[in-house]
Length: 357
Image (cartoon, rainbow, N blue to C red; front, side, top):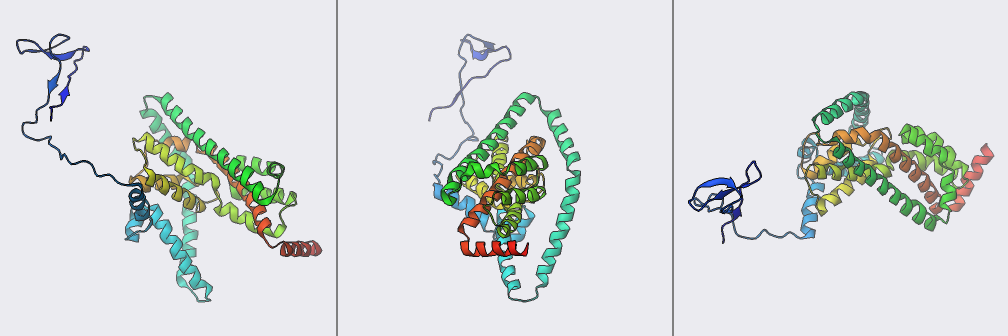
């Protein structure tokens, strides 16, 4: 194989050149190309071609190996979110079946108490969040030499998130929803204006819940018993905006840190965004911890990723739009549930409620 050819630049803009007498100098005259000869074979590499990995192999190793853990304690220690969530779902189903058999489970009581303790601890952390955000943002801005480019990059993240939410709203709420329920989506969604305003202002699905219930019941399309069941449940687990934002934020940070995601990593991010959003609390900025955990899980990183300070800086605004989409999704699902419910049972329950009133 031919020796690789290089040019060595000088500080004055010229290249290191060899004159006819063999001397070297920085000039535009003479030969400025040099060949590299690996005399000691120090730079010798294997000439075998890089093995090609098929898409199915990439998905198998990148998704299923992360989904099913060989050691759940190691996954807990390394914050492997996907393996932990999958184990928690299986473990929860098994524990729920045991409790449904009227067997007293001490482990279930322990889990309930641990849940209350962790929620209390998370509340303390949330109270300290403004100070942490301020310190991270000041450090990031102080070390950045090109703030204009950084703010332009965060603008791309915001734009991508909004575009994803609009596409979700158009496809799900304006196309699929009327096809399934035969309901005019524009007329129905117009009743939700007070709930949308409350969602944007509070950034909390739980705080918006009373307004959402009033708006949905005012449409006359959802019985009170279904609204009281679907809307509180949706405020807890139906986080459409969060499911869109988690993959977008993780991919943005990956690109910022020089990582190009492959097909398997995109799939894992979609799974983590969907499953993780269902576990997010219906409070402001609940997805921040999930973003860090999902990023470190998918891209095998640790600590706080570079660029996370900018995500913290705009989260208050993005969170308002996420909450609006979440509340809208809850309201749409309540109509879908009403459509597929037993109509006679629904009418009987509605008549019973009116007679009791």
